[in-house]
Image 1 (cartoon, rainbow, N blue to C red):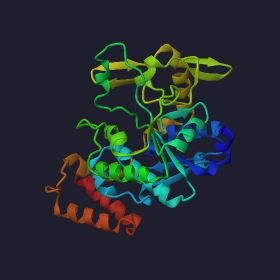
Image 2 (cartoon, one colour; image 1 turned 45 degrees about the vertical axis):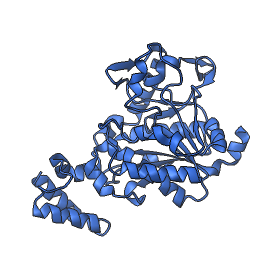
Image 3 (cartoon, helix red, strand yellow; image 1 turned 180 degrees about the vertical axis):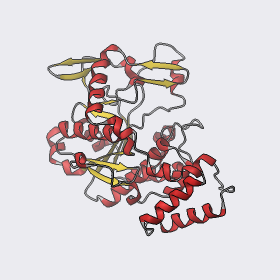
Length: 346
Protein backbone atom coordinates (compact mmCIF):
# COMPACT_ATOMS: atom_id res chain seq x y z
CA UNK A 1 0.00 0.00 0.00
CA UNK A 2 2.93 2.30 0.66
CA UNK A 3 3.97 2.02 -2.98
CA UNK A 4 0.42 2.80 -4.07
CA UNK A 5 0.51 5.98 -1.98
CA UNK A 6 3.80 7.02 -3.58
CA UNK A 7 2.41 6.37 -7.04
CA UNK A 8 -0.62 8.54 -6.30
CA UNK A 9 1.36 11.34 -4.67
CA UNK A 10 -0.34 14.02 -6.79
CA UNK A 11 -3.68 13.12 -5.23
CA UNK A 12 -2.90 14.46 -1.74
CA UNK A 13 -2.56 18.06 -0.58
CA UNK A 14 -1.25 19.19 2.79
CA UNK A 15 -1.83 22.65 4.28
CA UNK A 16 -1.48 24.64 7.45
CA UNK A 17 -2.84 28.01 8.55
CA UNK A 18 -0.90 30.68 10.40
CA UNK A 19 -0.17 34.37 10.62
CA UNK A 20 3.38 35.69 10.16
CA UNK A 21 4.10 35.26 13.86
CA UNK A 22 4.02 31.46 13.47
CA UNK A 23 6.01 31.16 10.25
CA UNK A 24 8.98 29.56 12.03
CA UNK A 25 6.68 26.75 13.15
CA UNK A 26 5.22 26.41 9.66
CA UNK A 27 8.71 26.05 8.22
CA UNK A 28 9.58 23.27 10.66
CA UNK A 29 6.31 21.56 9.71
CA UNK A 30 7.04 21.90 6.00
CA UNK A 31 10.66 20.80 6.27
CA UNK A 32 9.73 17.68 8.24
CA UNK A 33 6.92 16.93 5.78
CA UNK A 34 9.40 17.03 2.90
CA UNK A 35 11.92 14.89 4.78
CA UNK A 36 9.55 11.97 5.30
CA UNK A 37 7.15 12.65 2.40
CA UNK A 38 9.31 14.12 -0.40
CA UNK A 39 6.44 13.80 -2.83
CA UNK A 40 4.37 16.32 -0.84
CA UNK A 41 4.71 20.11 -0.67
CA UNK A 42 3.25 22.16 2.16
CA UNK A 43 0.71 24.86 1.36
CA UNK A 44 0.75 27.70 3.90
CA UNK A 45 -2.54 29.54 4.19
CA UNK A 46 -1.23 32.88 5.45
CA UNK A 47 -3.81 34.57 7.65
CA UNK A 48 -1.96 37.80 7.16
CA UNK A 49 -0.57 40.09 4.45
CA UNK A 50 2.85 39.73 2.87
CA UNK A 51 4.55 43.04 3.54
CA UNK A 52 7.58 44.46 1.76
CA UNK A 53 9.66 44.39 4.95
CA UNK A 54 9.27 40.59 5.36
CA UNK A 55 11.87 38.29 3.82
CA UNK A 56 10.27 35.03 2.69
CA UNK A 57 13.24 33.75 0.69
CA UNK A 58 13.64 30.78 3.05
CA UNK A 59 10.08 29.68 2.24
CA UNK A 60 10.62 29.15 -1.49
CA UNK A 61 10.02 25.40 -1.20
CA UNK A 62 6.49 26.01 0.07
CA UNK A 63 3.42 27.51 -1.55
CA UNK A 64 2.08 30.54 0.34
CA UNK A 65 -1.49 31.70 -0.27
CA UNK A 66 -2.62 34.92 1.39
CA UNK A 67 -5.97 34.36 3.01
CA UNK A 68 -7.71 37.21 1.15
CA UNK A 69 -7.10 35.26 -2.07
CA UNK A 70 -8.95 32.21 -0.74
CA UNK A 71 -12.59 33.35 -0.94
CA UNK A 72 -13.17 33.42 2.85
CA UNK A 73 -16.77 34.47 3.68
CA UNK A 74 -17.04 37.55 5.91
CA UNK A 75 -13.28 37.84 6.39
CA UNK A 76 -13.53 41.44 7.64
CA UNK A 77 -16.26 40.59 10.12
CA UNK A 78 -14.25 37.67 11.43
CA UNK A 79 -11.22 39.94 11.76
CA UNK A 80 -13.23 42.28 13.97
CA UNK A 81 -14.96 39.59 16.00
CA UNK A 82 -12.07 37.21 16.64
CA UNK A 83 -8.59 37.36 18.15
CA UNK A 84 -5.62 36.02 16.18
CA UNK A 85 -6.01 32.36 17.22
CA UNK A 86 -9.77 32.42 16.70
CA UNK A 87 -9.33 33.97 13.26
CA UNK A 88 -6.77 31.35 12.20
CA UNK A 89 -9.12 28.54 13.18
CA UNK A 90 -12.32 30.15 11.90
CA UNK A 91 -11.08 30.13 8.30
CA UNK A 92 -10.13 26.43 8.31
CA UNK A 93 -13.22 24.94 6.62
CA UNK A 94 -13.27 27.77 4.07
CA UNK A 95 -9.64 27.10 3.13
CA UNK A 96 -10.42 23.39 2.74
CA UNK A 97 -13.22 24.35 0.34
CA UNK A 98 -10.96 26.73 -1.57
CA UNK A 99 -8.34 24.03 -2.14
CA UNK A 100 -10.91 21.44 -3.21
CA UNK A 101 -12.36 24.01 -5.63
CA UNK A 102 -9.09 25.21 -7.15
CA UNK A 103 -7.11 21.93 -7.09
CA UNK A 104 -9.33 19.53 -9.00
CA UNK A 105 -6.53 16.93 -9.08
CA UNK A 106 -6.52 16.56 -5.29
CA UNK A 107 -8.38 13.55 -3.95
CA UNK A 108 -7.35 14.03 -0.31
CA UNK A 109 -6.56 17.20 1.64
CA UNK A 110 -4.87 17.09 5.03
CA UNK A 111 -4.68 19.94 7.53
CA UNK A 112 -2.03 20.15 10.25
CA UNK A 113 -1.48 22.87 12.84
CA UNK A 114 1.77 24.76 12.28
CA UNK A 115 3.18 23.61 15.65
CA UNK A 116 3.43 20.00 14.49
CA UNK A 117 6.49 18.06 13.34
CA UNK A 118 6.61 14.83 11.32
CA UNK A 119 8.74 11.82 12.19
CA UNK A 120 7.44 9.37 9.57
CA UNK A 121 5.48 9.28 6.32
CA UNK A 122 1.72 9.76 6.02
CA UNK A 123 0.91 6.40 4.47
CA UNK A 124 -1.33 5.34 7.36
CA UNK A 125 -3.50 8.45 7.01
CA UNK A 126 -3.80 8.09 3.25
CA UNK A 127 -4.73 4.43 3.67
CA UNK A 128 -7.48 5.49 6.07
CA UNK A 129 -8.83 7.93 3.47
CA UNK A 130 -9.19 5.06 1.02
CA UNK A 131 -11.88 3.78 3.38
CA UNK A 132 -13.23 6.91 5.10
CA UNK A 133 -14.31 10.35 3.86
CA UNK A 134 -13.40 12.19 7.07
CA UNK A 135 -10.62 11.19 9.48
CA UNK A 136 -9.99 12.59 12.95
CA UNK A 137 -7.71 11.84 15.90
CA UNK A 138 -9.10 11.75 19.46
CA UNK A 139 -7.38 13.55 22.30
CA UNK A 140 -7.01 10.27 24.20
CA UNK A 141 -7.59 6.64 23.28
CA UNK A 142 -7.62 5.01 26.74
CA UNK A 143 -9.51 5.67 29.99
CA UNK A 144 -7.37 7.66 32.40
CA UNK A 145 -6.41 6.30 35.79
CA UNK A 146 -8.55 8.67 37.80
CA UNK A 147 -12.20 8.00 37.09
CA UNK A 148 -13.12 11.70 37.00
CA UNK A 149 -10.16 12.97 34.99
CA UNK A 150 -11.85 12.70 31.56
CA UNK A 151 -13.70 15.88 32.56
CA UNK A 152 -10.63 17.70 31.30
CA UNK A 153 -11.84 17.06 27.78
CA UNK A 154 -15.42 18.24 28.20
CA UNK A 155 -14.51 21.73 26.99
CA UNK A 156 -11.87 21.04 24.28
CA UNK A 157 -13.94 18.18 22.90
CA UNK A 158 -13.24 14.60 21.93
CA UNK A 159 -11.04 15.28 18.90
CA UNK A 160 -7.99 17.45 18.44
CA UNK A 161 -8.37 19.66 15.39
CA UNK A 162 -4.63 20.10 14.97
CA UNK A 163 -5.24 17.46 12.31
CA UNK A 164 -8.16 16.85 9.96
CA UNK A 165 -8.10 14.66 6.85
CA UNK A 166 -10.79 14.86 4.16
CA UNK A 167 -11.44 12.96 0.95
CA UNK A 168 -13.19 14.63 -1.97
CA UNK A 169 -16.69 13.32 -1.24
CA UNK A 170 -20.28 14.30 -0.56
CA UNK A 171 -19.88 13.66 3.15
CA UNK A 172 -16.77 15.85 3.43
CA UNK A 173 -18.38 18.70 1.51
CA UNK A 174 -21.47 18.54 3.71
CA UNK A 175 -19.28 18.72 6.81
CA UNK A 176 -17.39 21.72 5.42
CA UNK A 177 -20.59 23.64 4.63
CA UNK A 178 -21.96 22.99 8.11
CA UNK A 179 -18.66 23.71 9.89
CA UNK A 180 -18.03 26.89 7.91
CA UNK A 181 -21.46 28.23 8.79
CA UNK A 182 -20.96 27.54 12.50
CA UNK A 183 -17.59 29.29 12.52
CA UNK A 184 -18.93 32.50 11.03
CA UNK A 185 -19.87 33.61 14.55
CA UNK A 186 -19.06 30.74 16.89
CA UNK A 187 -15.32 30.14 16.97
CA UNK A 188 -14.40 31.50 20.38
CA UNK A 189 -12.13 29.94 22.94
CA UNK A 190 -14.75 30.96 25.48
CA UNK A 191 -18.40 29.88 25.36
CA UNK A 192 -17.24 26.25 25.80
CA UNK A 193 -16.33 26.03 22.11
CA UNK A 194 -12.52 25.80 22.20
CA UNK A 195 -12.26 27.63 18.89
CA UNK A 196 -13.34 25.42 15.94
CA UNK A 197 -12.82 22.19 17.83
CA UNK A 198 -15.85 21.40 20.00
CA UNK A 199 -18.14 21.41 16.97
CA UNK A 200 -16.42 18.31 15.64
CA UNK A 201 -17.92 16.17 18.42
CA UNK A 202 -21.06 16.14 16.25
CA UNK A 203 -19.33 14.92 13.09
CA UNK A 204 -19.77 11.12 13.52
CA UNK A 205 -23.46 11.76 14.24
CA UNK A 206 -24.26 14.25 11.48
CA UNK A 207 -22.10 12.87 8.67
CA UNK A 208 -21.39 9.50 7.11
CA UNK A 209 -18.14 7.60 6.84
CA UNK A 210 -16.17 9.32 9.61
CA UNK A 211 -13.04 7.45 10.71
CA UNK A 212 -11.54 7.85 14.18
CA UNK A 213 -7.83 7.05 13.96
CA UNK A 214 -6.54 5.55 17.21
CA UNK A 215 -2.97 4.84 16.14
CA UNK A 216 -0.84 5.99 19.11
CA UNK A 217 1.75 7.56 16.79
CA UNK A 218 -0.71 10.15 15.49
CA UNK A 219 -1.03 13.54 17.19
CA UNK A 220 1.09 12.75 20.24
CA UNK A 221 0.87 15.74 22.58
CA UNK A 222 0.85 16.83 26.21
CA UNK A 223 -2.83 15.91 26.61
CA UNK A 224 -2.15 12.24 25.82
CA UNK A 225 1.48 12.02 27.00
CA UNK A 226 0.52 9.81 29.93
CA UNK A 227 -0.59 7.00 27.60
CA UNK A 228 2.18 7.30 24.99
CA UNK A 229 5.78 6.72 26.05
CA UNK A 230 8.45 7.73 23.53
CA UNK A 231 11.54 5.61 22.85
CA UNK A 232 14.21 5.75 20.17
CA UNK A 233 15.68 2.78 18.31
CA UNK A 234 17.97 2.83 15.28
CA UNK A 235 17.49 6.59 14.93
CA UNK A 236 13.70 6.20 14.76
CA UNK A 237 11.12 7.17 17.38
CA UNK A 238 8.45 4.78 18.63
CA UNK A 239 5.39 5.08 20.85
CA UNK A 240 5.01 2.46 23.56
CA UNK A 241 7.93 0.54 22.03
CA UNK A 242 5.70 -0.65 19.21
CA UNK A 243 4.14 2.06 17.05
CA UNK A 244 6.15 4.44 14.84
CA UNK A 245 5.83 8.07 15.89
CA UNK A 246 4.21 9.75 12.89
CA UNK A 247 3.66 13.30 14.13
CA UNK A 248 4.07 15.17 17.39
CA UNK A 249 1.99 18.21 18.33
CA UNK A 250 4.04 20.86 20.17
CA UNK A 251 1.19 22.94 21.56
CA UNK A 252 3.25 24.22 24.51
CA UNK A 253 5.44 22.94 27.31
CA UNK A 254 2.47 23.06 29.66
CA UNK A 255 -1.17 22.96 28.61
CA UNK A 256 -3.89 23.76 31.08
CA UNK A 257 -7.08 21.74 30.68
CA UNK A 258 -9.80 22.53 33.20
CA UNK A 259 -8.04 23.02 36.57
CA UNK A 260 -5.29 20.46 36.05
CA UNK A 261 -1.94 20.77 34.35
CA UNK A 262 -0.35 18.20 32.12
CA UNK A 263 3.43 18.59 31.87
CA UNK A 264 5.91 17.00 29.50
CA UNK A 265 7.43 13.81 30.86
CA UNK A 266 11.13 13.02 30.72
CA UNK A 267 10.81 10.73 27.69
CA UNK A 268 9.43 13.67 25.67
CA UNK A 269 12.26 16.07 26.57
CA UNK A 270 14.58 15.10 23.67
CA UNK A 271 11.78 15.97 21.24
CA UNK A 272 11.03 19.23 23.04
CA UNK A 273 14.68 20.27 23.15
CA UNK A 274 15.17 19.51 19.45
CA UNK A 275 12.04 21.46 18.55
CA UNK A 276 13.24 24.44 20.59
CA UNK A 277 16.56 24.26 18.74
CA UNK A 278 14.76 24.31 15.40
CA UNK A 279 12.65 27.27 16.52
CA UNK A 280 15.86 29.20 17.22
CA UNK A 281 17.36 28.24 13.87
CA UNK A 282 14.20 29.37 12.08
CA UNK A 283 14.11 32.74 13.90
CA UNK A 284 10.98 32.15 15.92
CA UNK A 285 11.72 35.16 18.17
CA UNK A 286 11.86 37.41 15.09
CA UNK A 287 8.62 36.12 13.58
CA UNK A 288 6.81 36.35 16.92
CA UNK A 289 7.20 40.13 16.79
CA UNK A 290 5.20 40.39 13.57
CA UNK A 291 1.72 41.80 14.04
CA UNK A 292 -1.11 40.20 12.10
CA UNK A 293 -2.44 42.62 9.50
CA UNK A 294 -6.08 41.74 10.09
CA UNK A 295 -5.89 42.00 13.86
CA UNK A 296 -3.85 45.22 13.77
CA UNK A 297 -5.96 46.96 11.13
CA UNK A 298 -9.20 46.55 13.07
CA UNK A 299 -7.56 47.13 16.46
CA UNK A 300 -9.55 50.22 17.43
CA UNK A 301 -12.87 48.53 16.67
CA UNK A 302 -11.85 45.32 18.44
CA UNK A 303 -10.81 47.22 21.55
CA UNK A 304 -14.21 48.86 21.69
CA UNK A 305 -15.74 45.37 21.43
CA UNK A 306 -18.83 46.65 19.67
CA UNK A 307 -20.46 43.99 17.59
CA UNK A 308 -23.13 46.45 16.49
CA UNK A 309 -20.51 49.21 16.01
CA UNK A 310 -23.08 51.69 17.33
CA UNK A 311 -20.48 53.87 19.09
CA UNK A 312 -18.15 54.28 16.15
CA UNK A 313 -17.66 57.78 14.85
CA UNK A 314 -19.25 58.74 11.56
CA UNK A 315 -15.80 58.79 9.92
CA UNK A 316 -15.00 55.31 11.23
CA UNK A 317 -18.28 53.89 9.93
CA UNK A 318 -17.71 55.35 6.47
CA UNK A 319 -14.11 54.19 6.32
CA UNK A 320 -15.02 50.67 7.41
CA UNK A 321 -17.80 50.44 4.85
CA UNK A 322 -15.52 51.73 2.10
CA UNK A 323 -12.83 49.27 3.09
CA UNK A 324 -15.24 46.33 3.03
CA UNK A 325 -16.60 47.27 -0.41
CA UNK A 326 -13.44 48.40 -2.15
CA UNK A 327 -10.70 46.53 -0.30
CA UNK A 328 -9.15 45.06 -3.43
CA UNK A 329 -9.34 48.41 -5.27
CA UNK A 330 -7.96 50.77 -2.63
CA UNK A 331 -4.39 51.96 -3.22
CA UNK A 332 -1.91 51.32 -0.45
CA UNK A 333 -1.70 55.05 0.35
CA UNK A 334 -5.42 55.13 1.19
CA UNK A 335 -5.12 52.00 3.32
CA UNK A 336 -2.27 53.63 5.25
CA UNK A 337 -4.41 56.73 5.79
CA UNK A 338 -7.26 54.58 7.13
CA UNK A 339 -4.89 52.80 9.50
CA UNK A 340 -3.53 56.16 10.72
CA UNK A 341 -7.01 57.53 11.38
CA UNK A 342 -7.90 54.36 13.32
CA UNK A 343 -4.73 54.67 15.35
CA UNK A 344 -5.34 58.33 16.10
CA UNK A 345 -8.91 57.62 17.18
CA UNK A 346 -8.21 54.34 19.00
